[in-house]
Image 1 (cartoon, rainbow, N blue to C red):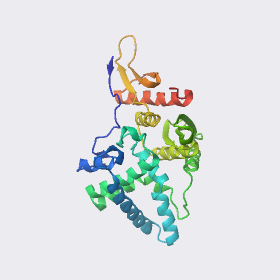
Image 2 (image 1 turned 30 degrees about the horizontal axis):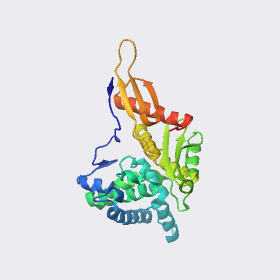
Image 3 (image 1 turned 45 degrees about the vertical axis):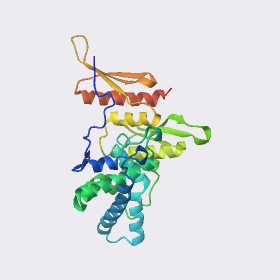
Image 4 (image 1 turned 90 degrees about the vertical axis):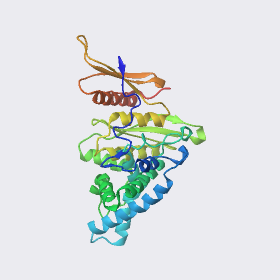
Length: 302
């Protein structure tokens, strides 16, 4: 038996984001570094990215909705740059698994991830210039922009997710409370939002179940238009719960049995075994998806 892919990061190079490869790798590293990690962090880039995103959306809305009045334009811009939209985008970009925080800082919160999106936009602007950064960011915002109208006022993420799934003939989402953390007066909850039947998940941790559900729904919304590997979702979920990444063990096929891959959570004493054909990466994704399904049905103990 050989071991492969233990704690494997998302399928991307260090200097790559969807639609763009950074020329200045250090800029991307800085954008993905929270203040708690130490060294050069992303707060200055966040400041710049906030301004870049605001101007970019203002310009876009001005040209796309020529009959909208200033109040409508302001409301639409607020919808595009608020925490719900940024959380969805963070989920789409799988930032939870890439953001560098100190070990004592805990799992990245929705606010931390939203700030990181703004920092990435600032870094992208510095690395690529206005025109290229504009094209990349608008591509990231395709799904958000497709739902936007002059009457947009910003819906609760749970409502948006429910409406999207119903419109596409899918069952309603299910919310699973996987963990409760901290003292009674400082309680936090880790929630996994599951889109049943399509194998998509979003996880979040917050100081109330309702807020964790809304943030998890926002993460899942950001992933419905893309293909975020199941192992990334599982890694993020375990990070929120305070557990190490999973390990994957691959057994090659022989005359007696087909190729198998085992996904194991050592601290939770959980494992799943999947038999299938395909590349190691594909099989690990299948095993991670099976483990996520198990967490949903059986809960988390330990």
